[in-house]
Amino acid sequence: MAVLLGVAGAAAYVSYHHFYGLAIALGERHDMAILYPAMSDGVIVMASLVMVYCSRRRLRVPVLAWVALSLGGAVTLAANVARGWSGGLGSRLVSALAPLAFAGAYELLMWIVRNTRRPSIETLAEGHVC
Image (spheres, rainbow, N blue to C red):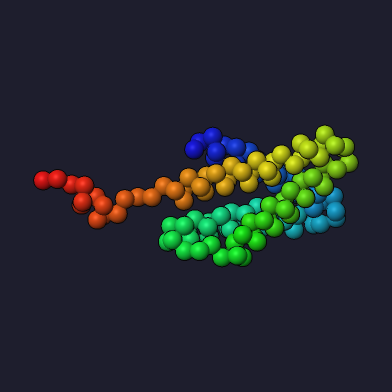
């Protein structure tokens, strides 16, 4: 789990700086440019947390959560690739790595959280022998 957190953290950091740099290059003010990457990666986190909530309560995941996850990932990927566009194909591929690694590591982490269930009190009582 530490590896997943490390990869997600490093990828989020790199992706944030790519997106921030793109916003600045497009003429956004510094205070606004700070928020754009937080919003796109935040949508990914938000959608994943809704999925965990639904999983824990055995609810159907709302379509909006899937849409938010997909669009958040697409926006982050597009912004990172756009930032590396001028450097050629290699730069585009390297720039695409950060959002893909972030989404992959974060979703795997959420998969672990969703599938780690604490036993209920009834289950513990049934297994107890006096």
